[in-house]
Length: 284
Image (cartoon, rainbow, N blue to C red):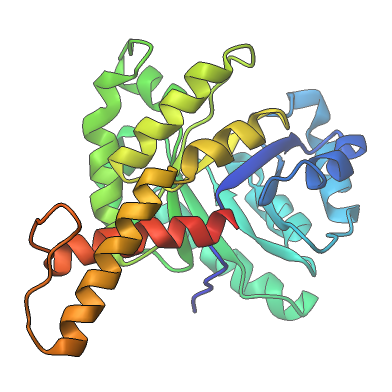
């Protein structure tokens, strides 16, 4: 069983015990809202969060996701398996945990008349990273995300502001996603809400590294991330020229295409150009 929702650019977390914020999050411009039952909710608010998420009516116009609490999987799946839910985030994603989530969803969906719900697996443990290809290939997995704060803590890392120490792991996540033929992965949150420039530059870096979306913690981050994920005007112009030159060469039967700078256009270059134009379509 698999589910393939449209890949979102932005996933905005909202604490599950704050139903007063659900509508605001949906109106923020984010592609997806993630009702959080895990880190965004303190121990005293867990029961209220599960009840609020279960009672919430998923309005159209935005994807609705639920981040499960691994300590309360059954409660979380019952709260998530409702009409209008796109899928669930699984923190600390590992093959065994994803298999359990799949089984719980498969049991709940027929009862609720919903599904199949998709899964975004968040890599936050050393074992999850070591088994990243199995995680990417697990049932229902639509794409991967990465929780770098939890991961760094488990690995005993102290990343610099650019998180260079985690770049190799980012590459592993991108490669595993490509091997599994799932959507490009989701980048981590930035907790500093005061630095829009760093949010933009770090998002642009994630794009260069192969990521295509980002998790957010505040509505004001949405436009910054969307702008950073969109290609520049120069990139779009170059991509259109490459595709046009290639298609003209195919039409002429010459087999040789050159871009406006006189460089040879091969299939790999065309694929990259089409990926740029796909980013334009997502932005639109």
